[in-house]
Length: 358
Image 1 (spheres, rainbow, N blue to C red):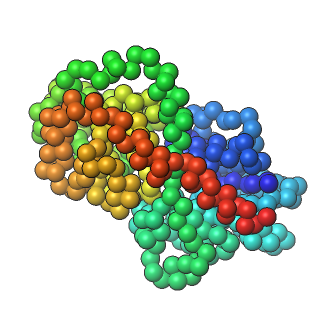
Image 2 (image 1 turned 90 degrees about the vertical axis):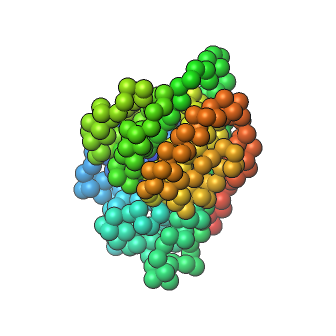
Image 3 (image 1 turned 180 degrees about the vertical axis):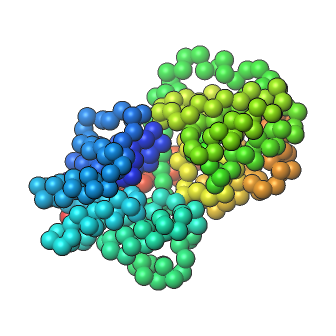
């Protein structure tokens, strides 16, 4: 089977590469086309990758060459814009490829900008199959849009690679040293923007008197604002902005953290939350549907209203008061995580979709 995968960018946190491309590297011959080039991803030699430089015209010409010289059994589109470029590339002589096209919606509909909603809708209309990254993502699609696509749409819940985490954890011979001391180790993973709502956490930390280490992993348009705000937070909270780091380094931080917190106002089905839950972090999550869909064991998670500072404050105080118990019970979410969100479940569901085109 030959598969063409279209993605906006290859980066350390990219699901289209980490979950999909790597997940199928042993069983499917894949060509990955990325509109943007990123330098923080180590590309597996079994996957053929074409990097772009952000030029739509260059990607258009590349796709025309690829579809002319190759017979792809499946085309998997992970983004509306790359899907539109693909449509132009195959028009008018190779429109038959649309019969072998699957589109994945990687977010909840309300998180998308109007521009991306329009692009995604066009690509969803012409794709043969549509998969959403979770049940909550499927349920977020408005009824008037669902009217046109319902029969060819299904939820395929995101999965994570627990073996990757196990390997990194086994390499930490001195891991017990991380679970000592009175400081609460907090981790926040994700793009630094208004939707992810990191500012709410900083506002609370500016009020509460706790000893903590807070690490932000990610980059984004709000980075400078968050850095400036963090300068005024009391000295008992040590805050570090690590930027965008590799997936393995992200997992290593999860293995060392006591708490992973996401106060996001919108998500798809966040793989970082799945990985942090399996890695042993106590979870503090906003009450949005994708987080509720993950629903970690009740003794390893607190749900909070992302706009309610008192709830956020109480969750942090709970973590501080129960720090020893949180560290002792790190493995309680592992079986649940694998059973419900193991990557093999996701890959198996997508393989069935791919096979339906062959």
